[in-house]
Amino acid sequence: MSAHARIAAITNRIVERSKPTRERYLERLRAAASKGVNRSVLGCANLAHGFAVCSPAEKDALAGDRVPNLGIITAYNDMLSAHQPFETYPAIIREAAAQAGGIAQVAGGVPAMCDGVTQGQPGMELSLFSRDLIAMAAGVGLSHNMFDAALFLGVCDKIVPGLMIAALSFGHLPSIFIPAGPMTTGLANDEKSRVRQLFAEGKVGRAELLEAESKSYHGPGTCTFYGTANSNQMLMEIMGFHMPGSSFINPGTPLREALTREAAKRALAITALGNEFTPAGEMIDERSVVNGVVGLHATGGSTNHTMHLVAMARAGGIVLTWQDIAELSELVPLLARVYPNGLADVNHFQAAGGMGFLIKELLKQGLVHDDVRTVFGHGLQAYTVDAQLGDNGAVVRQRSPEKSHDPKVLASIETPFQANGGLKMLRGNLGKAVIKISAVKPERHIIEAPAVIFHSQQELQDAFKEGKLNRDFIAVVRFQGPRANGMPELHKLTPPLGVLQDRGFRVALLTDGRMSGASGKVPAAIHVTPEAVDGGPIARIRDGDIIRLDAIRGTLEVLVDAADMAEREPVTIDLSDNEFGMGRELFAPFRHAVGPSDQGASVLFHTH
Image (cartoon, rainbow, N blue to C red; front, side, top):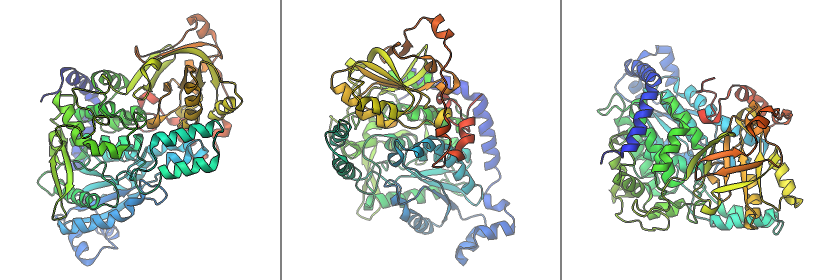
């Protein structure tokens, strides 16, 4: 089916806007690809260093230009549950490549931090910047120019977007992303949330809280709620970087390993030495990017991707804007209910039909482009499948089910959970912001209340514990943007605000910081730009100002006379406590150079 008319119109607008940057990008990409097998340009000493530890047979193969070599970029560490499974992947990939007549080498490792560990801690102020650092680190690994294709091993929040930026920066190479899968289901996410709120109210202690958290996060694999990590996996599949059906298969299973082996063999087939050369930068185009945005809306995905997708697209010369994202949100119905947008986790989503069913439903009404290239071939229709393990140990694929196995988790296109996507853009006299409403009850889509100003998460938590917040209000937590302190996630605010909402108060959050994919039931206008440190309107709000957050009309206003607002001096604060400790001093250049949220909050791609 051809694309929906308005989807096509938005895509065409992105194409026209992107022409200057996209054309320059493709020229550079094609110039790099025209040089042929990369190792052929290396001198003998260079090449000898590159294969010094290889076997004699591998050296003979790499000395020529007819045996493809896969470069593995890995985000492995054994502290992150989502990345610990990658420990064994290089050996599996090397063996699979050898069986298919190729070679594989680990080209480099990239840092992978866990936002769950650093939540509310100083280290969280490095989190967003780690995305661009990961792109740089992956670039260092691939700069050895020894490789005919790249395999990227990464899962979590900033890691996949960083790897994606690297993949498109080396867009003359084919690239495949290989996931590790979600951990098995533990303590239900709503029960975990309930215990967190009880702890915030002082009704349970640390021992009970730690027990609940440990039952939730209990083994190898991605956290099972639908945050940024699992949104990443959805994106990589719907944008064609995963093998079909591979996103949400649990670690340590025979099918998981079979999919990894299949990906390695497929990577060899799509090099310039094979018959289906598929350079990543040619494969991904404006249609692929729109498919990613549509998938994000249809699943109620992470707010982080309103920044990541902008930066990822820009790495391929494509200029995506918040306006594009907002307009697409109005066209795309919500088809998935996965925590925090529902009670189910990603394992339930997979059991209900997973990505294959979701893509099939979106294709029915032309809400995604079918005429795209993927690592699997041409057309998104090939992804409307369920991957299973065949009798011979290889992957086999069946058509995705005609009906959802659990309509409470995964809906058909004819009976969506709501008419539009979970992400919306807000704009008004406070600038621009993002809100995720898929988990917010309709009666709370509009909040009008007086502002209460805070300059840190701790200030709000202290006020809550002192009983000062038992009223209607909008919490304004400012000086949390990328230039102020690296734009940490503010999830420590979720339990107290959730408690206040449950007590019947009309509360909301307004911040130039982040809340990410775990944004839940409390209305939260986040990523406000211009940020406070740049003198944005958020820095002119005073305690008691009436703020109106309207997620239906898409507006964000402080109800103050315009002349009065203009005469106010923006508030400034001492940010020196955010400049040192836990590595923060090393990222001072990032804080100085970073662009605004709506341009991707990147040090790599933005206009001054």
